[in-house]
Amino acid sequence: MTRPTVTDTGIVLRPDPSRVISRLFVAGREELGPGESRAGAVIERVLALSEGETRRTAAEVRRKFRRRHDYFAELIDEHVEQIVGRLDPLIPLSAERRFLLGACFTQEYAIEAAALCNPSIVLHPQQPVHKAGKQSGTGTGAARFVLSVRGIGEGHRSSIGFRTGSVSGTGAVRIDAPSRHVTGPRWEAGLHHRSVAHAHLSGHEEDADDAEFVLSMLPDSFDSRQLEAAMQRLIDDRATRGEIGATLERLRDFARASYRVAFRPESEVSSRVLSPLAPRESHGMEDARFVRFVADDGVVTYYATYTGWDGRWTCQQMAATTDFVHFDVSPVGGAAATGKGLALFPRMIGGRYAALSRSDRETNAVSFSTDLRCWHDRQVIQAPQRPWELLQVGNCGSPIETDSGWLVLTHGVGAFRTYHLGALLLDLEDPTQVIGYSREPVLSPGDLTRDGYVPNVVYSCGALAHGDLLVLPFGIADQSIGIVTLSIDELLDSMTSDGRVRTRRVATG
Image 1 (cartoon, helix red, strand yellow):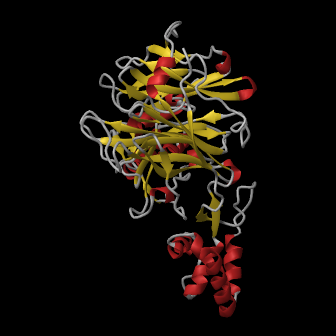
Image 2 (cartoon, helix red, strand yellow):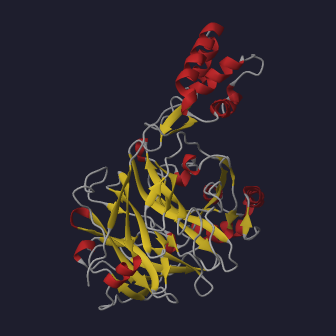
């Protein structure tokens, strides 16, 4: 069996440090170590300026920064509103002084200052799809797509950005020029899910009774107002209970992981950035695996499972959208959803949701769920065994459905922590059964793709099937992004089924 022919498109996406978002900045709270806020002193110094100094300084700030941001005045005003409680309402503020106060509590953050990597790719939500599943759109056999990217900035904090592009009927891939400016979304509290709350608290037996008391009063999905009301009942009952403080804090920590965000509908997709908003993702939103999920009734939802990182622990979060304008974000639960690398199948199988899991950090497994939120048992389908995967294996995005089976792109890590990309083929009706695999890597670091932020790594979070063409974007040394294409038929023909990987069920809770 021969390796499939891999065609380099010549496209390389590199980090652009000029792509910045604005965010609140409080002097003394720069996260460089323990420190107290110096907000009061900053406000006093701004109030002490003469009107002339205020006007000149405000004008200079506008000259330097206004053209770097859309909705510039609104961004500044949002930050003023966050410090208004420190201002004496009896002291009148001119518009210029108010603006300067907001500017002193604002900073730019370059979302791609260090790296741009680990992409996934899905059909654009505005791309028409025929009932038979074939795509139609910008030209004969052409399709538009959305490419998600992991941007890494100061402090190794990751965010989720986007690019758009198209693939022609002849297999030519084009990436649109990104928007000049990027913006963050508007935030609001989200919905919580009781099954995930149970999973979130399952490891804390000392407050199981108190947690169950609260959760039993809540519906399957609930908001923060309902949660606070239920917790108040626990507080009212504290005389008959032990220490309830830890239970309350864990429930509030769980609640802070769910939120909704919305971008301006008129904005370009490439201008939108999902940056950390919940405590459990405060140090990064890593390696989003987007999938175009088609429900049994034909409704299409785009889901992204990604890794939240709070500086100590990782967790799995899920974002859901239908238009890449509005996103619902919430945690997922269960032992199979711990760690990194959860990747959803694009449809239900046998009446259940299915996902690839790498919760043990070294094997590929399949897990099932009845509610899309909790993933408990997992069945290992691939363990490290070939020379290029001796350290660990994992998935490179959601499976792709073919007539022959579920095509799963994988990664294997070998000597010198070198990452290679391979593939598995799983049975369509029972994806715990491996019916084919790559003996040799499909893609490996080469002379031009070896050096970067993290050397010797090629990595993807998802590919796109366009007829027989597989469009495979991949991270190059965790630094930049390349795109290759290959024939799906050739890839399937290159796979072998002898020496089938034995599967085993792992009880994980």
